Image 1 (cartoon, rainbow over the protein chains, first blue to last red):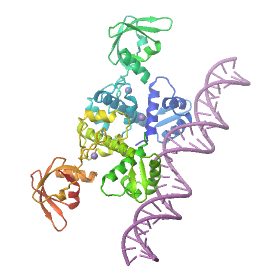
Image 2 (image 1 turned 90 degrees about the vertical axis):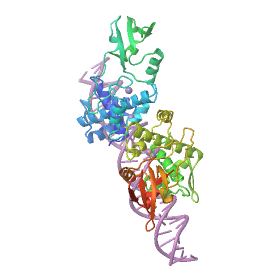
Image 3 (image 1 turned 30 degrees about the horizontal axis):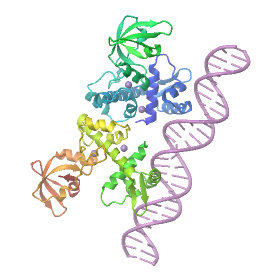
Image 4 (image 1 turned 45 degrees about the vertical axis):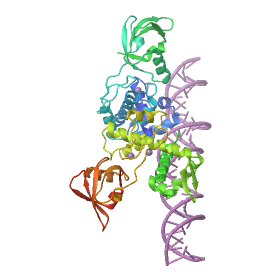
Length: 217
Length: 217
DNA sequence: TACAATAATTAGTGGCGCCTAATTATTACA
DNA sequence: TGTAATAATTAGGCGCCACTAATTATTGTA
Ligand SMILES: [Mn+2]
Ligand SMILES: [Mn+2]
Ligand SMILES: [Mn+2]
Ligand SMILES: [Mn+2]
């Protein structure tokens, strides 16, 4: 199959391509992976030779059908393992990403499908990201954020956009998780801060940046 | 922590050291890993510098206390994952080794212990090999083989020495697994073949080599 | 003990995947 | 449009971990 690096690049390219209207440049890939752009250019050459991506200076990097298929399977494995770590081993949602980052590379023809079955065919991972199905179909992902909400209305937290430890730990502190109900009380015009009520409790104020990273249902 | 290769060498050295009275030479390690002895010499230098092994031409390679501790933890992870793959994901015992060979390298401070708990603190892996405890203690392993049995007596299969697919698949065909009861009917003096009865069923003849790879209780 | 077989070691090489530094191409905007 | 900033690429190098081929050390046996 592929090397560890090839897989990480494929997945990074897939992730960048999910952000709408973003041209996938060597620099963007480098930032996602924390690598030097020069290294990315090397790998672009390698993946192009393997027909997993196509690179055009104007259009940027694009996954080929094969590359897309393979990237989706890596994402599938990552998210399934995250569910396993959280639900079966009792990790918290700020601890699972790095471990899944390694587990996703275990290559065995039937492992992902067996794990999927064992977990009861979950549709979303602990961060609310859709888990691609064995056939490559990806459940719908969420795109409306807390900042899109009208004051006075309520919603359910469906996913988080930022999955950094800093953000996830803040959410734990605020007692917010997937499924938490949030009501937007008001928007502060000065800096777009949001006054919210979490699960019907007393009001809390959060920043605009915070709101943009909460995806709602 | 360690690189993938370092871990595989550590484990290989540990495994060779478990065979009684075997001097651990570069050649022996090379054979275990399927590597060239020249490569082994490189790694011996590296692991010696890291104080995980000590190498003396007369005495061969020896694990230091630190090296031994680390090797045992890798073995622990390997065997725990094997239990997981068999019991939770439904693999057969001839399919799990290669996957565990990769899973054992996932490094997370609490992963092995959580997995251990999830699996109910198993003492033996699906091949009957002892699973080291979190504190490094290793449950007793089995050493008496089917060839040691006196004709007319019976025993319980406790472990297999050879874990190659060829052997395991043969055992599946013979309907022999851990826990199977075997009675030794007779030993053929000509070539030490063994006539056995599996779970009280009709007699079967197996080779001396076969018998040496069945560890009994 | 001498010699042949075997084992261990050294020397040199190559792929992979990363880097820095230098160079070239592109883009933005004054 | 010219120039400065930014992006992409090339060139060269490095660490890791394998290898082969050549050499040296050890061993077993006649
Ligand atoms: Mn990864
Ligand atoms: Mn996730
Ligand atoms: Mn391994
Ligand atoms: Mn085993």
